[in-house]
Length: 117
Figure (cartoon, rainbow, N blue to C red):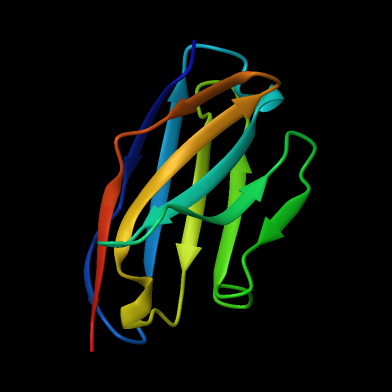
């Protein structure tokens, strides 16, 4: 069992930055692939980025060069970060943290990011 708690969302002007955090507890965090998804009003949830247990990273084309994912597997940390720079109004969404390993999958409650133009 894995519990995920996101934080760091908020309101920012276009061009600004935010850093989201996803803190995990309950299982061996380093074994899981951790992803950030987002869902804008009226749209489907989409993958933003992911990082595997051995550090492989994928970014959606829409965020490449602006967003950076990183993870801290150290004991008592178990945190994944999403650094978001050069934010655009189209980045406005609820951002969700996801942990996946084989058939197991867990979601956080989400954190709202709003980018004003």
